[in-house]
Image (cartoon, rainbow, N blue to C red; front, side):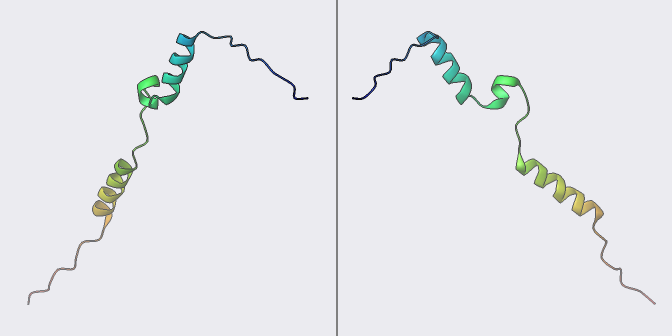
Length: 62
């Protein structure tokens, strides 16, 4: 014989819906924290590499 279990919910349907919206929201919307942007890091690395790269040699004129 299979045991039957009953589930009782401690939250109302409105609370469950609000929790579901918080879980699916983007982090920045919920906590105002900046989200990770890999393209911003790549842009900073590119700018740093361009600033630190050696200059091409100049031609000597006699």
